[in-house]
Image (cartoon, rainbow, N blue to C red):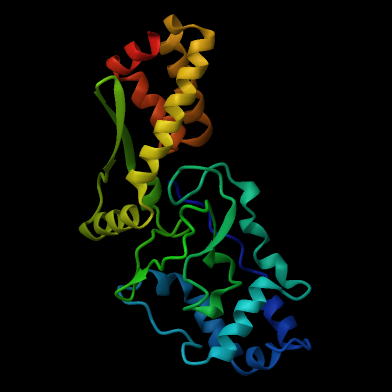
Length: 265
């Protein structure tokens, strides 16, 4: 979980001017609504931070909605530059959850509900498949997810892995701390956590990582368990940050004496 620098949107106007002058089916819609689209693009940050999301320009038109969705799926020449910044290969961990590396692009405002933003760079977020689910994040006219470009809260959240040993089996719990945040920020953080199913997904990940860790230590020697655990934790923190799942797992294990004892056995 971490904030990302907002993408460059300076080329948006030029690209849409080219679309308007092209022979694409959507060109007439862009020509007709050019000023409205400009207003929506320029007001994007205000839209996503509004207590109540406004209505899409194309909420009542199935045909126009499909045209904008197709603009993202099969962009005309030159328009593909608008989503090039969000290529998943650029990022190490998913900004929404801190887990696996992004393998897809998420529309923060869903293109099915806000098709005009289907190719708008600030609306395209690199994401893992677990966070980019088909279930809608928009409920009660607001978006449950924190926006990696415009929600500095993501980088201020503090996660901690705690471990409980029951019958020689570790159980992993992820605790979320929201220091120096307003009531609204805390509420949004909790809704974000619930939407991406953070605790349940982390617990499954940690159980698999535990098995892999035991296998590694079985081959290299149990007496060096704590040194190995802390070395990996430090390396993960330096590379991916304090909220990456791998760091949280190894930091939690390294600070749990019963867990270290099991790994040494």
